[in-house]
Image (cartoon, rainbow, N blue to C red; front, side, top):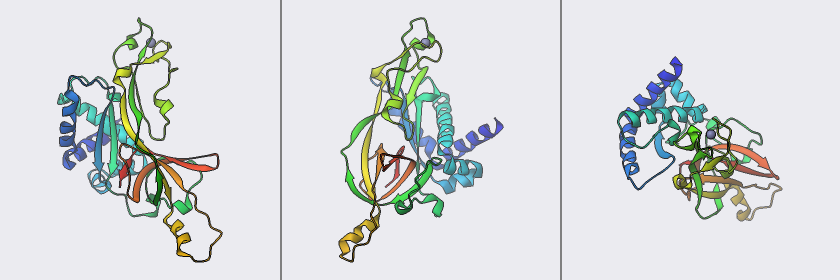
Length: 268
Ligand SMILES: [Zn+2]
């Protein structure tokens, strides 16, 4: 417990030093529009791993190796700041705060680089890596559900109102993990129904990426037996057109193809 408190304290110090708290104050302003009713409020923060390590090496390690845990720490600190400073009056629970950490860069070590030619074909822990490749195809930008509010169908249950059941898109998850019609109430076990007017949508784009060596086939030299397999990236929140892409990723293999599903494009 003491560890978590000290990590949260370090998050606060980092946000204060890096201008993150100021940005949070600015980002909260549009959410106070009375016309706006949203289940979750999304905030992006630039995270410079070197600066975080300077503030607290344990937090720096957490950001680089357990980014989901680090995100929860930032989420908690943001919620506390929003409540303490009354930045958004209509926010009720911590789960309504959706935090995205955008890395400014990663340490220049091989562990933080993913070479498309040495693609690991196993599940691994989710952590940030950088990868380079050629974009050979991309879809148009479509919408996906970032967050949704669910209410219990039983009128007697306290979860039939309020913000007890908030579902937020998790890294690597499919759309159906966020929004489905057979979630059950944690309190009474009745069915949950989505309150669609609170649904929050975001942008999504699929990009096909291939190793830059695939261009060798255009050089006219003797053909080798090597073949290059492209990978599909799910970019969320921003569209990508540059070659250098840094992502969070988990890897799944199915039907002989490799998909990378990620939370967000963190650099382009
Ligand atoms: Zn219920």
